[in-house]
Amino acid sequence: MRDTITLRGWVGTEPTKGVTKNNRSYSRFRMSVTDGYFDRDRQTWVNGLTSWYTVSCYGEMAENVAASIRKGQRTIVMGRLQIRTYQKADGTFGTDAEIVASSVGQDLAMGMGIWNRRKDEQTVTPLPARPANVEGIGEVDPATGEVRDDTGPVDPLGAELSEFDEACDYFRPADPTEGPDSEAAGDGRSRDGLTGEDRLLSA
Image (cartoon, rainbow, N blue to C red; front, top):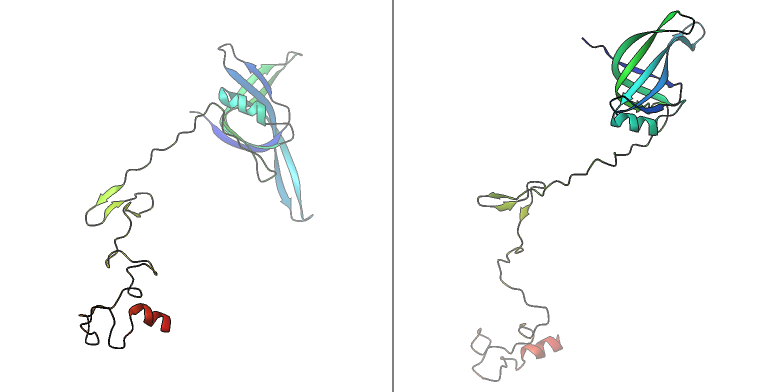
């Protein structure tokens, strides 16, 4: 069973960078985590015990950590805890708490950071969704729900004439057979002797 923990602390050393025997990139840095508590008597925060950890990163994350993490930054690390025993120069033995990191990030509660996508990560452009054909409605855009109609709206009254088109009633001579006020004369004049154009000008 592996112990996975999350640490929030300060970067104590500049990250080192190298290559393992298997030709895999790695990066390491030291991180300090200090317990704190609020002293009610003094009404202030008091620092407690400080623990030090070695954070180890491998692969592509090691490249990103080496380029992003700097000494003095507030950092959050999540990974697998390993307790290692080593022998000192004087012959005595010591222990080291190592975190094999799965995630490393800057603590934005204490500062600002800029995130950039890896250069080798390709951006995938999604394919446009095909319109759905709904019976009685037509093609409906699945993304917006709008009805797709490239022909435009249908005018129930037919094509409209321009305001001053030659076919407009204002310029068309009166039909002698149209309406009770019209005479059978063929000159286009009504009972008052005015054509449609004359009425427009006299108005």
